[in-house]
Amino acid sequence: MSGQRAKQCKLMEGSTWRKRGDATTEDSRYQQCPNPGGTSVLFKLPTSMGSESLKTFDEVIILEPNASDARYNKGSVLRELGRYDEAIKSYEEAIRLEPGAYDAWNGKGMALSKQGMYNEAIKTFNEAIWINPYYIAAWFNKGLALYMQYFKS
Image (cartoon, rainbow, N blue to C red):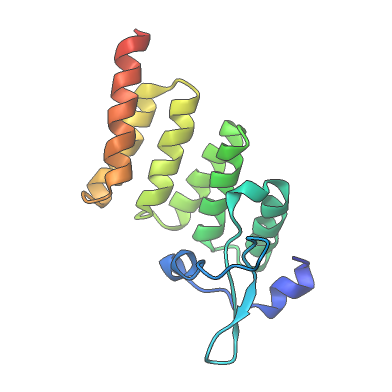
């Protein structure tokens, strides 16, 4: 998506942005999609699009510097690409903007786990669980990190 096209979109705030990412085109890309109010919504791109997704999230961050969801999504793409240090930095930026973003805490923990930093990952998963004790992904990832820590030592 070009910067001009991104400017035409009305960026949704918080978790609404993620939840509204259900509409896709035939080629499975999220798109600018009109809503009943006559404005447009920028849907997140799936992480499988790699560098194209990174460009779009960078454009969103330029337009909306306080968009924690864009930083979270960028971190998820970077993690999927195996760029763990960059992913951690992006998750930390999302957390700085929205300390209660339990999904960003979880994503950071996943990137730390991929680097074999299980103690740090477990602390990070604990943060996500403290914020949202019903967030099953953080419980699962914490258990996996504990398991890996046990067998790696």
